[in-house]
Image: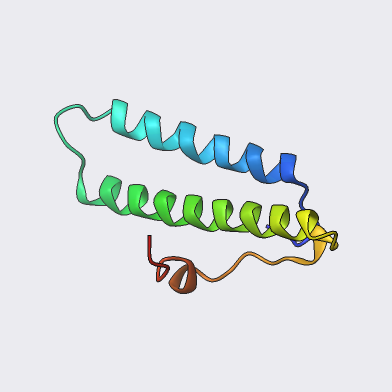
Length: 83
């Protein structure tokens, strides 16, 4: 994603990722193959990155700052956050 994304664009991307995740899970009721599990993990990481980007944008907007200046953080950074 580029730094020029609007909240709507980020939310649309999240919706696409969630739809793919649901379809992947639904298409394999008896269990996922190794490749499917790898794709599912990739989707989860992309979702974490997209949600993080959206949170960054909203925090900047709430602080009266330009939200377009945020960047998608690397997967290893986003995945290292404590819940």
